[in-house]
Amino acid sequence: MFPDNRHVKQQASQRRKAGVAETRFSMPSAKIRQRGSRRVRLTLFGAAGEVTGSCTLVEGADANLLVDCGLYQGSHEAHQLDRFTFQPWQVHAVILTHAHLDHAGLLPWLCRSGFVGPVFATPGTRDVCQVLLTDSAKLQEEDAAYAERHGARPHPPLYTRADIPETMSRFVAVDYRWPFEVAPGIGAEFYEAGHILGAASVHLTLGRREVVFSGDIGASGRPIVRDPEPPHHAHTVMTEATYGDRLHSPIASSIEALAQAVRDVVKRRGVAMMPVFAVGRTETILYELGQLMRAGHVPPVPVYLDSPLAVEAIAVLRRHLEYYDEEARALLQQGIDPLAFPSLRLVRTPEESRQLNDLAGPALILAGSGMCTGGRVRHHLRNRLPNPRDMVIFVGYQAHGTLGRLLADGVGEVKLYGEEVPVRAEIRSIEGFSAHADQKGLLEWLKAIKGVERVFINHAEPTAAAAYAEVVDQAGLPRPLVASFGQTVEL
Ligand SMILES: [Zn+2]
Image 1 (tube, helix red, strand yellow):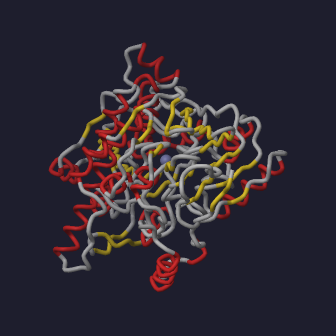
Image 2: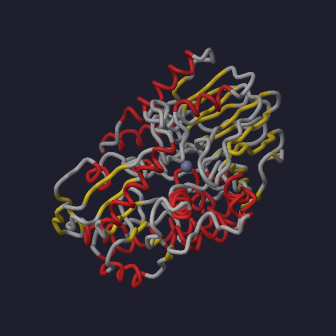
Image 3: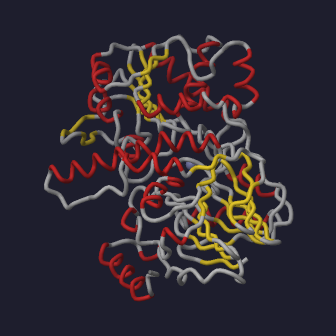
């Protein structure tokens, strides 16, 4: 059954009651049309005016497909599922740009809710999905169990670990630059996006129309992953613009700031905590620490990677040496593992993690989550924030409303596990390690695509989107439209 308009209106009124910002929601498009003899159209079901929940429905002449199927993370979880005006069984195929949960995290829900088609992704994305989706399912089970134990409102998981084998069985792995047919009349090809292992931009051919979905575009010159490779030609481009309003500081100065922080913490025999997300930042930091130690710029200080998820993700990276960039390959040829060094320790069990409470410095602890909203980093913070010899080094973006942001902003006290914890440890923030291209990188990527007639910005906060639209316009390209939620674009 299609949800009718009344259903959609009810959802909108529920959102208003729940306090969900109405500006983020314009009325979704009508139901999916009958197949055959119809024009191609795209409808955005996520990441419009924000940077989470990526999901775009592509209605071709004879098939419907989704490009990404992402979880809403953070404050907009209220419309996790009610944003969709299609039924899972109406989707014939899914194409994933990459494995981050805000792009792939709803896939197991889709598969258990009636979707029976293939999921096209690069081999790297498939393998990272196995790790991240399993972890996401586990967290949802734990949240549901916690809600039940504490008599809270029932909070059923969207999916559980039992759904993962079936989800993974739908994957069809296709490598970069290998054109394939997604469904009758729809061709596709993956291009390196340079963001995380396996990340791709997707080039779709629908009849005579060519559409590119950028996925998340990485910055050039980042370690391990290759630089982004823009598709050569397209009529329509749907691009991200997460950092569309800023320029990253040069990577060399970020690396020097990291080296200085390590030297300072070693000098005072402290422990530095580095909150990191498992896929995207951990490998970058391990690579840079290894390079700094091998060059003698920092002493071989013990580094504890206290994240089972990151340990698994690193194992996936090691299975895909074919995706490494030239610098990482050069290290391999010299017999050096780009993701390891002699003083690196992998911490797996909760007991091993707790033992780090008594660790004497100097040492570094890398633990999730990257914005301190969950994970093992929180117990390290409770333990070490009161100690002036210790340090917190932020190497990633800290969103509003997160514990990481509070600390980065310099609060004197935080609440952890119901306790007031004084912040006496030093807090440092190092920018420039982002897995996203900045304004210059985004523009270079877009300019390399020939024949572009229309540009849509998706996956950007409103100020970043507006600033990026301006520079694209000034560069003589078609002025981008900032996509809004539920918007339908005819091609
Ligand atoms: Zn991403």
